[in-house]
Length: 157
Image 1 (cartoon, rainbow, N blue to C red):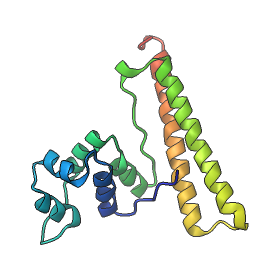
Image 2 (image 1 turned 180 degrees about the vertical axis):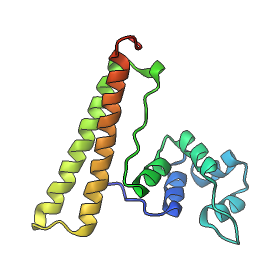
Image 3 (image 1 turned 90 degrees about the vertical axis):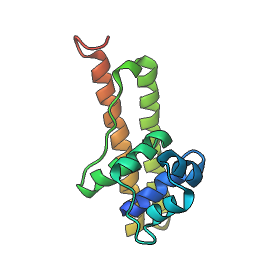
């Protein structure tokens, strides 16, 4: 599954709104805006300010996405790694994390294989490969941190 690389805050906001359960109308209601005013903020129309980072975060928490922290981390040459909630950690959760990380690695390999069909990796393909690889590394890092957190001496156990 290829996910586009988000290169601007405006693209981030658009992705969050598209992922929001119920779409624009429900996202607007969640922030307490009439739809027209919400659209003005999202698209920065009519001299409206863009949504604030707090508002974007609020929408992302409801949508279950992490576009904003991923975008910010990318600006600094890093990656976003979500930390586990200790109360949710158990062996089933660790297994699920391992499966998600392995699946993301598989996505990277599939993208590379497709890009190599013509024998050349174009700049746009390289960008998609690196974005998918960053998502894989983030999932793997989160898996490792959760494992350490669950089994650390004196930890949850």
